[in-house]
Image (cartoon, rainbow, N blue to C red; front, side):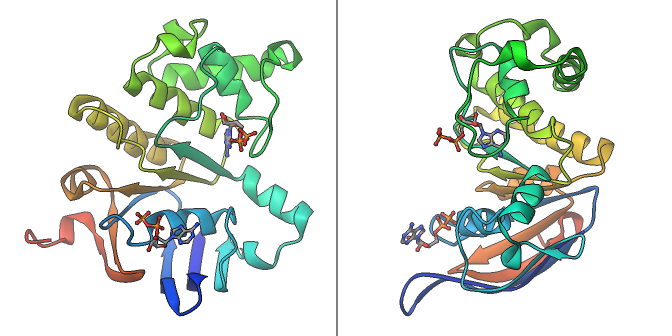
Length: 237
Ligand code: ADP
Ligand code: ADP
């Protein structure tokens, strides 16, 4: 379980970006965080893996606090938290399967093109994930040849290769057309259930959030304004 308690963050004095954010999420749940630009959505996601240092509160992953973890512990936690980015963050000149394997290097690895280093079991795992995202036939193609929707499916496969407990998706569909957006949302929903993970995605589109997420957290001016199961949300929101 992921628990966020009294999370606070200010980038500048007396200008809070986040104020008293509280929520907890069980495995197998797809949560959408929605709100206008500047509301604090990215700040929440980056706090969840401590890419930015927040000012106060607790972030507990299965009871362990990321905020007070030492360097080694934090590295361990980050292995359990996959990332999916708006602009995919793929290495375009490498193949699809190399990019998926790249996820094993984890956060802040600058190594690329190390295909030969991987074991057969790791390559098999990457192929299995590519099957899950419907791209097994593209495994040996360069990422630069793919469409945006396909690139994001590679990004999702990469985020899953370390068997994370949580994946954090920062505007995963903001660069995609409507049809690809739906495919990616359906995939996130299905994988969340299949792998029993926690998926947290920042989104602009309330409509897609309602259609695919289990739960929606609304953020305005750094504060939570609602936190509801998506089928409970009233029409006017
Ligand atoms: P969202 O993801 O909802 O668009 P952000 O989390 O990016 O919102 O931003 C929340 C607030 O924090 C905004 O007022 C933004 O201007 C401010 N902010 C974000 N990042 C920084 C930063 N690195 N330095 C200063 N202010 C920032
Ligand atoms: P650099 O600043 O040197 O580019 P990054 O932190 O951006 O380093 O990471 C390098 C590459 O590693 C990225 O292009 C991305 O493909 C991959 N990557 C980064 N973070 C993750 C993550 N959490 N999970 C999987 N792959 C990641």
